[in-house]
Length: 99
Image 1: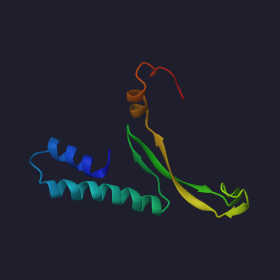
Image 2: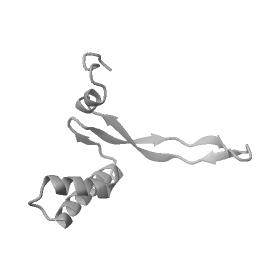
Image 3: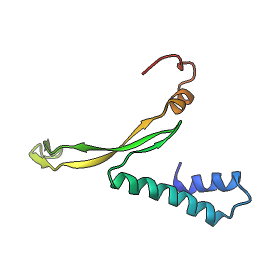
Image 4: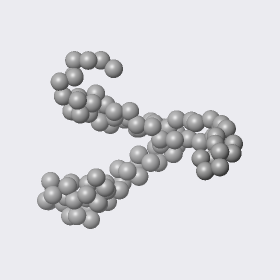
């Protein structure tokens, strides 16, 4: 699913809202999640999951084309951990098993 499809679905479920308002709402939610992650914060959506940022330290890597060693700089990457309810919906019948 892409963002425009998400906007279409939310607009269809809420016919009392204008399409442009739904688009603004979806953009606002995604922007707030992005801003929170950029500030180093964690974003938790109960039942869905949690977004956080993890540090990947610098390391020595390989150029896949030439095989030469290259230096890969330190970077921060987004990380998503699914919530319990989402895991249960994706794996029905396995709800009684713990992580």
